[in-house]
Length: 442
Image (cartoon, rainbow, N blue to C red; front, side, top):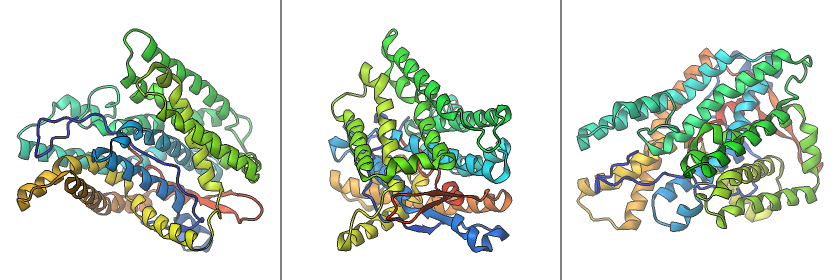
């Protein structure tokens, strides 16, 4: 939809997109989660690790949310050309984290509860999102004396805004991920039921991904080669984009059930350099091929999730690249970025209204003229302030309540780099607290 600025209420911007970059490798540091657990077991030192977050994932999330804000600030045209690729990074990241929750639950309880998973997902996503819809709708009605059609709100409420027009353009990714939240646990439950291997009933998952990947390529080809090319459908439809999330789930499966494969792959420095070069090459295709082209719309999204998969693995396995004062500087910057990344979901939700309304509101209240740079700074500060505030008063209090009623299933995933470095622990609790941080982006 419809970002109705105070200064130009008739202006409707183009679809927002996320910009993401390959994050600089930081030392592995875990920081406390902002959603403390209330389970008695968490008093145990062994379970205390589950209340930690992996800083690198929050840094990635911060880069994405800042990139999308810079993109929508319209201050640097370069972001408008390639900034949309961040959505593919977060699809891979979401697939990895969400599947990790389910795999950890199976390893802990030898089963997966679809009902429990969906309740926890709903308490994470719905309260912040539905309040966002309500408050922005009220503001549109009160200030602009207008309101989108009720059908647009229904599309948002039922998460089909990636197929039919919704209220806000940037929420279509929530619909794609919501559909993935239904598809993945249902598939895993089927694999559990029909597999005779109770230690690893998900052995068919990589082959299932191959089928999904081929089908998505075929669907995207149909969208752009049959009849009038529909690049929007190829970009936003769940049946065209599910492979990105599913690839993240395959990486999660390897980490949980086949860690030796990734350990052997990433143990060699030569292999890590090769993966980095290949990832950079795959991601660089956005600089040479237009997104709204038939060839890229068919195959380009595959290249992107493969490239971002490499970025994700390197961010988890590789460390100790920087030394001395340089490492310390990047550590400080990384800690600050990770602190912002903790609130990225609410920041992402509210950055659209902040960009459309906040600079004009400040101009009217303070009676000051603003140039492009001043409007951009006002928008950035306002977006961060509103997003962090809404996260603290809505998102995290509900998550604390959720954790009291439906505590997370504890578990620890151990990743290793080379022999010179200690193990990197990615706890189930950290995954639970870190999934869906923007996750929703454009």
